Length: 539
Image (cartoon, rainbow, N blue to C red; front, side, top):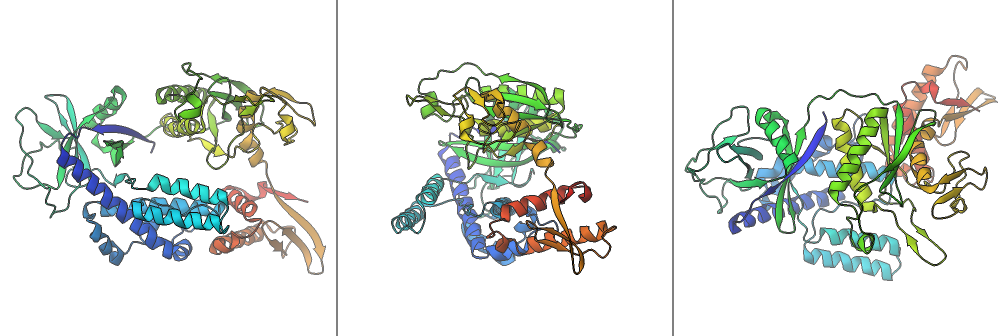
């Protein structure tokens, strides 16, 4: 089911309400970090025993690691209203980390929350490691930036279900056309609980199939009510929810600059899925926000061009602000990309600008910089926007590929060298002479990434030995002697499955191998293949 997220602002003038929210979020953050710390001491056990039959990590499986005894320990943080959500939220984070750690061995273990004193202790430990040269300056710098973000920074509070009697729900006042959020934030013994008073000037009806009216019970309640503020496009979804409450799913309570927001996941329902036939590569550019290229499955260019936003001032913007392009303009750019992808039935491909950059920036002989219109932050924002906008149209979410060599690799002969970048705007291949505008080159190389990847094969070396014919592949560690060399596909498939099972059962030890990334990538490709024989190349 395609999901969309809408964010609503909580109107929260009461000091009491602010205190209740802050305490709930603080308790949630502490409990979440407590689970992460506990898991870190047992990470190998979790790594080996909480993956599914295909070798993947799932949040629902890892959440089961939080047993009854550990669940009771969480009560010290007064998180009883959020315990189910806390386990799932923890499972999501740890599953993501373990999956990332398999392909990126230096991935840092996640941190949710650090009080000031603990932050100072960690900072001193990092500085000691830097002085003693036990860790590189790059590793220390990255770790300091990470803990800075978590210092006294409250983690968003997760509500894992939409319900009228727990977690959270929404209400509607038809008389005044106002929407409210009802959030369960307190335990049964919380001293901040108060009765909800009836207000003659409003009638709050649950956005629920039963459409009940909220009435005062006279008891001290564990929930608080908040009027909501939002824009026109968010209101469109709230109106739909009045008729179809089932579309309202999980939510997160977020604090930003002393303001509070409720971010709600909405089920968009069944959307006719479009089978993609082409690839649409989207790359940052120097003269415009992005450049795109559409190619067919043979890598032939179908169309290309720029997608522009409202002109913005250049002076000082890109140097000092993350938001070089306003979020509203990013939405316009995303809408244009979706329209092109829908028309061309295209799989959108984006660069993964996380750990490595695309090196589009240019510095001339006078040390003058030419900087992309979109910052890395903006480009990643655009990717996140496309993730739900494409799905709403029945298209798959964007695939993210490595940005390495995008602006230095020849799209025709494949030569990769910095010397191919002739100038700020021009690419000339030293080997074959291919000439392209640098912006066209970027999106073209991104668009062709999957074609290049899909053409990769499982190269099998065949040789005669004293034992008979032997099939070998160094990357997989394959040494296979078939009983019948002329009719051995089933036997060969079983051998490959055995190699994959052995790989996943010893993945942590395998991660130390220099060829790990190649082997991991090849095994993933083998898993995804519908017909193993289509990947095999005899050499």
